[in-house]
Length: 321
Image 1: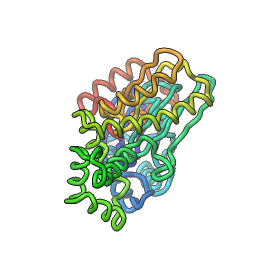
Image 2 (image 1 turned 120 degrees about the horizontal axis):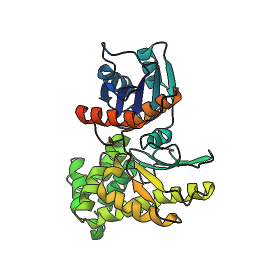
Image 3 (image 1 turned 30 degrees about the horizontal axis):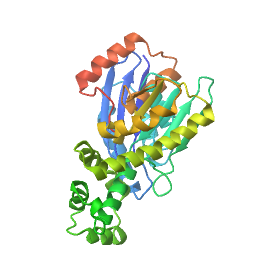
């Protein structure tokens, strides 16, 4: 029996799932960040071990293959290899796993998680990606970007009344600042981490859904920047008639941000396009990549069994990234 471990090492959350070739879930676990950048290296080992603790129960069969998506190497890879012993560790791109999590091998992925990127793969095998460079020089339209824009708005609210409102008040509250200038001082003396800034994204989307004009403007501007990357990928590949765009990542889970992204993405295509969330969690997508590597097809029977098990485990739907 083929058994695969899919491991999604996200910027905020990690998840591992042990899956059989028949679609049975044999183990599942979660942890924190698996990324060593941005001063998070000391968190990685605990995060990965937490996820593996219940994903690889002692009474479960050992995986013949593990597929890691997210971090390209480092401590996460080392711990995962230690856990699976002599079995093969395969590294797969996040985009490949997001496509697999929607039962596709071609198409476009627009990721807005802690970070962001756009990826496209044409039917002839050509592919192109844009973004993924991290904060300061990248992360266009990501959860980090939404949070940073909210901080900027809160700081400007000290000077411009058009920025004042429920969102900017909520940002001050999140950092326990009484005055807006306190936030400026905090940012320059003890800057919040990338994860702390990205954690503001749900606050932005929640206020946007309540009609806050500053929050709505932030979502529109962020969606415009991320869609500009998508336009570049489309131009490079010439896949304007692609029928499906997958909106991945935790920031893209919010209805208000999905609407903003759809509004900017849809006009880029020559015809109707289905802009949707992934069908399955990234860890399942990683496991699917592993099954395909072992020659196991994503059959209707496998999918049916998996759907039943996901519901039984309380894991139905696409997890946050």
